[in-house]
Length: 85
Image 1 (cartoon, rainbow, N blue to C red):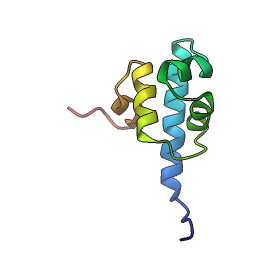
Image 2: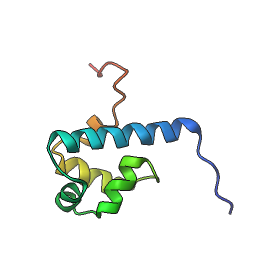
Image 3: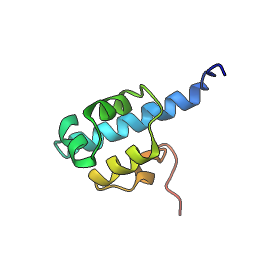
């Protein structure tokens, strides 16, 4: 089965998620290596997610969110929209 191209909005969402993770990581003064170790994933996984190089696995995102001590929902929330009441 041939691979289908993803719609542009999906790449934008992956980029936004990568930026959120990178910003949180840097606020906590973690290197990619330190975050990877705390999350139990490879440094390459953190790097690929931050660069939006692939579709991240949910388990990796959950582990990274836990290592950053933030709910995953906070990382994926669109900052341009007000938080849900």
